[in-house]
Image (cartoon, rainbow, N blue to C red; front, top):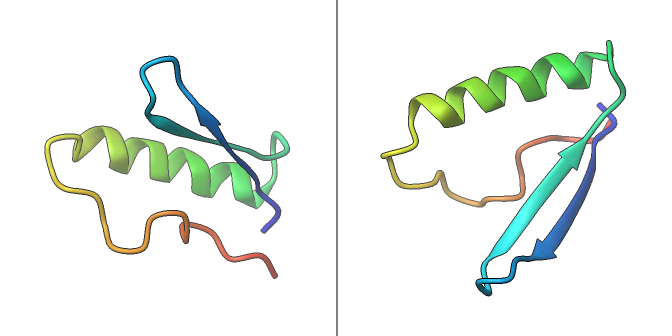
Length: 57
């Protein structure tokens, strides 16, 4: 999987992680699933080890 990840500092001082990948790639499908999972569990605490969402092969 090839995912580019970048951490940005927001105006309110919080860090925002932006991840991008090429359209139509298997990585895009994985990110879509992650986005749906994140939206469904917005009220739950974050999973352990944030930032280790994708493995690069």
